[in-house]
Length: 178
Length: 248
Image 1 (cartoon, each protein chain N blue to C red):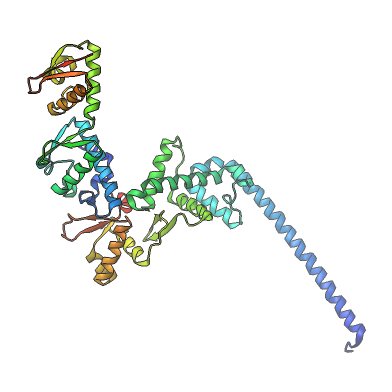
Image 2: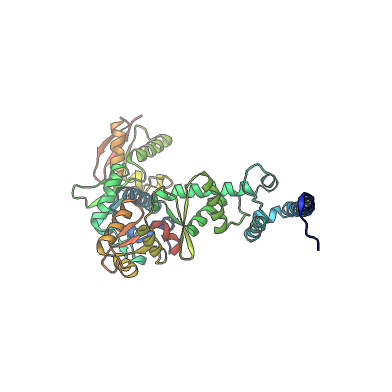
């Protein structure tokens, strides 16, 4: 089945797209296209985090139909570039996986706080589970959000004085402040 | 026969010559008048024809081409000026100016990807796409129209260059000079799905290694080609993005 996102990018079938380009201007255009492709792909499939080892074996980083694929160095170059743009961040120092911010933690924080405000949970305690997996948030865009991205988003709210994090393990909770 | 000598004879001769000249001028004038009349009649018929088939000229590419050829034969250029009779009547001039603007837009929008080289089929496809979204679904345009509109643009200087390649054309929108070597490699790639490599260049053009390395390096630096290090042959392939999309 053709991927609706990938078919938007002619570059995806262009063999040199999978080789990081030596000319800086060309590389800029290439990285821009990769960044846009990855963000759209992740948004469309609700992917929050990419494991680099896994990425070396599957689309969109591999295109079996033209026998081309990004190398590990290629992947790192692309994600570093996305990090500079503020749309990705390494999950650890070893760069074994990367968060993809098709919505930034700030944007998620706003969406979550907006929901809390609307349903009247200000000054209440919610568990992390309730926020991303509870029945009440099924229709919210942040339903199913990756826990680690959720934690980053809640930390944003905490900095803004809009929340107090009680504990951040997976059964943790958070109190929202007015 | 008495031979004509003397002043009288010379005068007589001159008179005769003058009369001949007069007569021949009269005949020529008559012919010119007739021709002018004919041309005027033809022109007015052509105008009537054009007015009558205005829609067809705008919509049907083959009809438009034939009309252009007909106009060219009698020395009428409906595109020449924006405020002559023809353009007012037909808006044909506008048609090509508008097209020219769209051609430039596509060239500019894609130049950061393709380094300013685009195959005419790809250009046409993209121009059509942009016209489609801009409401003009009923008009069909061809590569002939694209070439004409580019030709019109050359009045303004050498903005767009047309490079002939095999049976097709490549439009160059960057003001850099392509050397003969560059153009040769470009032609080679355009008949090979948009890419080439050292061994193809060597066997097809018979160049020395240094010459090949230099032309490839130049074209990478100009942003004209992309390097593919994962080619089956192990040696890198060099792709022209502007020639790629048409190959699929």
